[in-house]
Length: 434
Figure 1 (cartoon, rainbow, N blue to C red):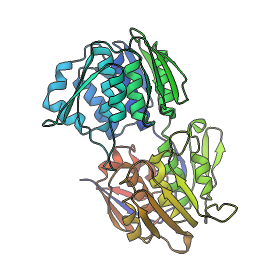
Figure 2 (cartoon, rainbow, N blue to C red; figure 1 turned 90 degrees about the vertical axis):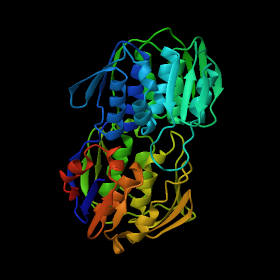
Figure 3 (cartoon, rainbow, N blue to C red; figure 1 turned 90 degrees about the horizontal axis):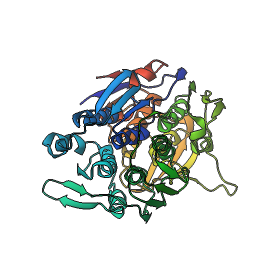
Figure 4 (cartoon, rainbow, N blue to C red; figure 1 turned 135 degrees about the vertical axis):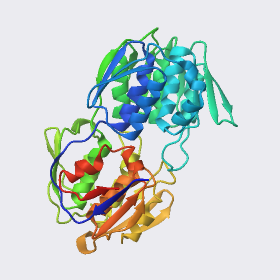
């Protein structure tokens, strides 16, 4: 198990460029299974989850080429469906939650799919109901082998249907959308997720020949087509990494510029950091964060405590709440962090409390942070990263703390952040990988 050793208290300076969006990449890579023609994808992040999914496609006999550092080509013209029955497939796909999104493309194009119960972050129960119920409405039959913990899905021909999703699941919407583009007739998905990731996936599928309308809204209409062709696609900058860098700059009192952020696709993220008192300056498509000697949490007219909560897009993404929480520990003022989606995602706060943060964990979904400003700095500690997003939050805390910190199980961070130690060290951080 790898670890980071972080010497805290060093300011950052210079420019840093976010990687391609992890969540978009996982969807886009699964979508290449929908066509036998070549698909070229640019700005692919070099991270563990994405690399594992690409290797899974290789094992399925998808032709994969890597002509440039962040560019891949895929051609799924000879997919080996028998590989889905192997123990190796069960093991590899079971350790990667994003692999569930191969179900929609496989069922739509080949009429069958197998998928083990997927893994991923241990942040609470993560339902697959939305995926499965939506694809069932298109005519697929599901069966579950409890002994092998395996789902088997079959369909002679998917047919369009109307569906109202019980939750605006991003990966669920993507899976259903990829199944529906090759279904017979018209599919209507209401309460669909509409994150930029879904907008990007829809735009790519339309370039491949799909007929998707309502893109960017929560009501998608898909007119099924018989086949899809190849295309070229460029993945957006990762909004989660952009937000992580904003918080990191504020907490370490650094002056940095975040390059090529895809600012128009960041939604409410910049304004949410401004509510914490952080100066976020847009310069074209870049973001400049000046040095903050201190930053004060905004209060309402009646001086009530601010609440920062996640919500379906265009609300605040839940993947950034861990960062907002840690950034608030060094602000002036108090804030209630309300994580609505996952019941275990806030349990990492005990590690921040050990570092000297003033946090009250109200229940599994809510934590009150009493920001003490720079009067009391966090102190170095020995920690274990429980998931990707808590891991980056702990790294930010360690970089701002007095003394040396150790973060173990950093494979969790590597799953979502590309060469994060090297990139931060290049602008002044002191992070050693063991």
